[in-house]
Image 1: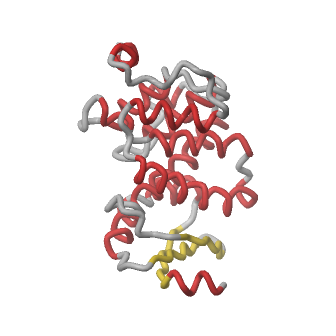
Image 2: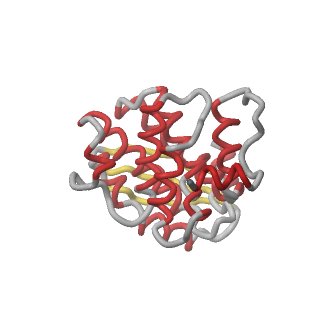
Length: 217
């Protein structure tokens, strides 16, 4: 019903075929009035984390597509209501017509977006229970990345310009760079690192440095 209402109001993506799955995802997000600046920043930070962790933790190439889809669309639920918008985002993604993304990938993206805030995944959650054991682990890790990235853009102004990971045993040092004070982003990341730590079985330690230092490296 919601998606049909979007179409009736002329807010749906153009009927012409998109040239890529990413264009399709962004077009759908914009039809739900997504915040481009925040969504793109969260996607950028999420993918930076993914790319540095994929080999170590066995994340697959198509998992990256699932993560980027979830990151770009994680706040689409605002189109329905702020209250429980993470659940609304899950519903919208689940029923979206997304070019180049399989139904299973779309379902995993929906569940990943559902856990960007509030409760962590639980066996009693129907949408999580419907996933296979392997998919549950993958979604928990992708949602952990998304949740952390969302926290690192707490002010929605792209303060964090880059991030780098260094795994040292059970501790992951997350080095954040930016040209402004990142106290609020550190708070946001600390508040939302819980699922990441649980899914990857590591302790996240934040380190900050001026953007210029990273550029030199």
